[in-house]
Length: 201
Image (cartoon, rainbow, N blue to C red; front, side):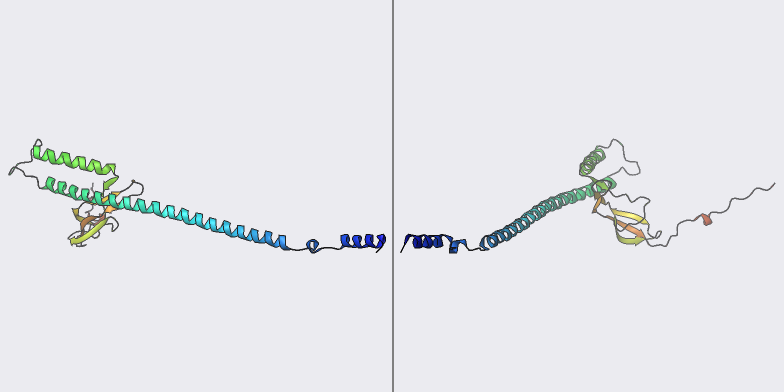
């Protein structure tokens, strides 16, 4: 083979494309696959983060609920004690036919302890439910019977009720047990009042 023919063969070897020079879409498909995998990983992390935040909120709420339930039980026990003091004050021994002495040590002791107990309840934002001159309210009062009286009128209080929380938004801790009027007594109206006599000259 002559030198010219060898040069042509070598030139042909250089310019002939090899398999590594053929165009391919493999790098682009790998990049798209990585993008999809990254998106899946990001979505999974976001779901895990949201689940963790929800778990934290539920756990914190569970703790608050358990604390409130425990506090409610203790306060209800204290309310039973307050009932006992109210009963003791009503049924305090008195000398026959005489007014109770203001310096009676027994009465003073009971009143002092009762005042301390109610001061403790006030610190816990526990307040009495007022019933004087107020109509029956099913959200605040529990009717246990009826007595002669006006319709929807609180005739007697058998057990004092209490609310808990700030004055702006109190919640019922224990409803008042009351006797409600059966409607047999009509409230006085202005038309029932006799007209004042007119003076004549």
